[in-house]
Length: 136
Length: 404
Image 1 (tube, rainbow over the protein chains, first blue to last red):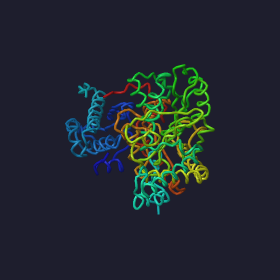
Image 2: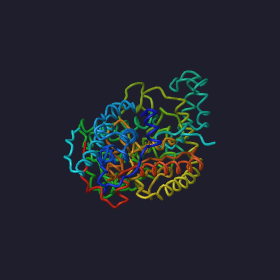
Image 3: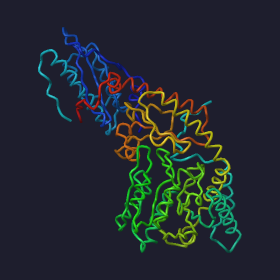
């Protein structure tokens, strides 16, 4: 399969690989996918509660190059955004940015799900209701 | 200077040995005759080339030159052998025994015959890819006309106990056929000593050209016949019509001669290289060898790296040309059916790499491959949430995954 230059770049030099302290109240964690499906994505955000801004984002992904690139790109985009802005990220933006082929669109869906799940986790930890998750 | 990528996919195909090409060249140019033209020197010269090749092949596998039927390759040979026996011996019975880890050329041929009234037993294999001789014995019936089990497996390199299998087949009056594609030219194959009645093999797995193979068909004790699957001029003792691929056949002959002379030295050198590659990769945790270590082709290693995803791994080892058990590298969505038959879980089958070394593989290439694979696996594991959980002692089977 031919990968786009941007996918190869993110795969070769992934941004923000790592783990945030999930015991902290202002850290939200999203874990999506399943090992038998060949993709597991974990995305974490750290939020400045005063400004509702995402100050840090980390990921770890088990998956193909497109899954790694989608999550790497997502962490780049999340940093500096408010939580509400982050909620507006649509998987098709990731598809366009990385020039993902149709068979890899599910990687971008997974990244969007991971973002939403991390935000939901942050909300629940801080006394807000969980997000309604769309099921793909 | 090391040239990249490094070719380690020699179970798929091998490069043409320059000496084979040299032997073929005259038959691609001046000696262009049809080997079946009996009336002029052009035909005679071509026939002479074919006869010489038949001798070279016969010497490698210890048979009579007349017992070689030329085909287009191992797939055709497998088809001709199995379908040919089914048709020829239909009066005697309709039962065929094979195994779940056979090549598709055997499995799909058997499935086709099932639609035509054949009864086929697909023997299971153990974790090493070996069949049980007790299972085989138990599966034999008076209607069993053919036992078809491969010599060496293309994915794992596992070598089956051919002589014992042949003895069981013969004790019950069945013929024994083997797909020798991966074994012939790599390890000693002696159709007399091994008790083989029919054997498929091909040139391009042993440094010969693509598009030419052979079917060995025993002529005495017992005299075996297979019904032709193509009708035409009655070439190859009536078993395979079609103008002979003279340059290809000459190439197959030369490849067999070289194998006979160099196989032992090649195997000794390659098993050392293969063992070093394997030992180095096994220094990483959660790394597993697939197939039999004790009964294995000398140039093959199939290794799984747990907690690494197959397609990501293939992308990480871009400097190597290898095969993967992963679905993502092939057209189908299922991971390797051979590895699954050995009992591997989907994720381990997905994260496997098959290394196939050749006569042309160097120490330097293996050194590079070791470093390259280790680097890719380490990097992907550092990026893998599953690896992190494993390191923390979390049992992944206890997690409720959000399936999508």
